[in-house]
Length: 611
Image (tube, rainbow, N blue to C red):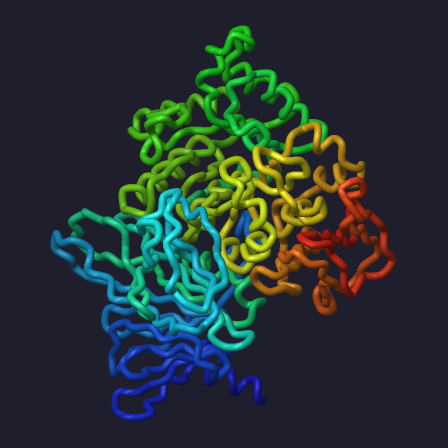
């Protein structure tokens, strides 16, 4: 009876407390919203989490019940559900979901005017723990833990604040811990045509939502993207599907051709593109050996026939070779709107609609399965519309899409399910560029499951056992764990063929059976920057991956009661003793309650494998 009363309260409660004051709640009663000194105060289990400065009304209309129930092709789970209570306060539409809130501004009957000014700011007091990304157009940076916004700008790749000044420009997502074990993650979702994406600019404790450039003159009805705040314990943050819950349903009527999978990838090992036909063959052969469905033919393939050692071979020959081995090829394009001068090609093949259709028709004709499109230039409306054009055109020609050097996911993975992954992350590619990543990678890796990967698929390009231009000091088991810890519909394996084929047979078998589609995802343990343990289920098989983000040995708890109901066979991939003995691979009869990881180490449990 008490549970039923709570549900009735969640559906019906919008009680006037005093003149101009009111309170609203989520369907499960955990999240509430009320006015406090002219701002919206968000609370979780009666603990105040965040103040939002947005237009308010004394007499909101609502609640009405919103239900999300849909299927995904990739993500944290295939079947997603959520519920919300929706309230309307003038132009502001506010939804309180069971795992957070989403709100946007809706306008009727605009008459050839520019987009109305954004009216949202988040108040984040100094002293609160937060993990914030300094904005860059490729969203490639760290999320260091801090208790202040007063940090120097790093400058560098695509940044907007001059180096050595205080940074005031921040990218999504922003994770904060306003009270012990209570978190809020700020982002946005559901970018549509005629909209730009936004980012955050702060003045002291006030973080204003600032949409990027949008020069359109708007006529008719128009609304902003959803401003999203995921709220709760770390499990609520990690397991949330709120970004896709508020995004438009799939625009594709036939998705039977869309197949997520693991990819062999050339760039990491050589810090170079794919103009060498013999190297492409090596990576096709690696895909065959590891039973991977895909190979990526990276940048510079348009110059292949200019290389004398290729003896006249070109991209069509490379595609044909992959197909002859049963491997589906993906190929790279320069978007030609970001880095153009001095950048690799092919260039300017996708910008005009007629050129794009011709190019994608050719890809479909010769048997290309998908395209990786690189070097975008930020969040403005023209870029957003261009991305939508690319996804729609690719879908017409049955091409998968990977956006690289691009803004973060904002729900397109639901609306256009041929978009299987997006970079928007400081990933393993950075071992090629600067030495910074070597020492920071472990902590950064243990932060991403709680920040960037929460909001959508992430093309980090994991799993390197050897070194590229700069060495890595994470363990082999740590690297293997990243393939499970990070969700991506196209999981590009970074290492060179000879390194993968030198690993134990059990590791090669693991990679050959690695799923890219997960029926469920659960937070198990961890804390940003220190450690991360997630469990993902594919059919009846559970994959439990954990990493140590610190420079000290760490025994990591793995409480699986209530997650894994039955464990018949268990494989444990754990840290070995040293570089000469990097693996400790065992079979277990019982689920371990903890695993001891070496500094920057990790582990993977495969429970009830089908192989």
